[in-house]
Length: 272
Image 1: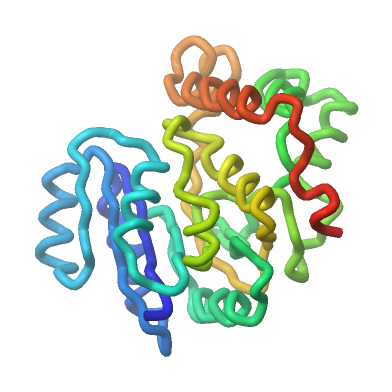
Image 2: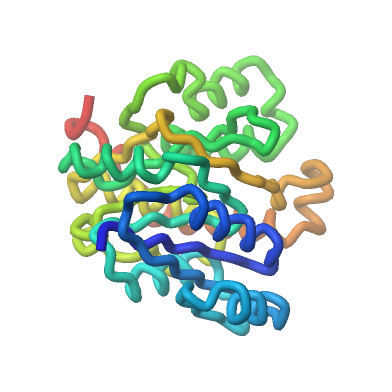
């Protein structure tokens, strides 16, 4: 089998349905399986999967286990030569998966590739980045981010110097959509389950680089992404005091920086 498509979902059966249907309609000439790993499973989602998508392998969790657990469950229970991890709020456009798979088979040095992500109105999303510095978190989470020197740093973090026209090696990509060869997955290992939510994709990409695999942003393939920034809603002060997602993000950031304290960027001397 060419491909295992692993879809992660959390309490959004409507978008999940659109995601699965986009794959069934648009992925052609590829042998694949679909696996859905669902966190804090609700009856509506379970019934939909059983009645409308009996051909899809469904792994429910009856508590919120976080993104990393869903990815790991789907990956370890899959059989394809390549893995395609998708959030349930992703819609695959026509030929997007085929283009990624063709590129993956032509370049044996890569460990992860990610498509260009678009909002539902067609505008591009930021989905490839340079590795965080501690100050990056401060600038992104506080009003300091509006200052000129902070904006310059954030432009560096967001890779504003990259026109996104051709594939390019990047530090890390958003975990919403990423394709991985099974051989790379076996060497790097699953997502680090110490990260309950946020930073697990940054950490995973970093580990791919540490193991000699490139991370590639591939704008020649496009997917739609209904991206809700839950941890940044209602402004900084509201988020700090009342938004649990903000605290989850901060907690994961602390774990990430502690894990890599004193370690250099793994891309140094491994890539141009």
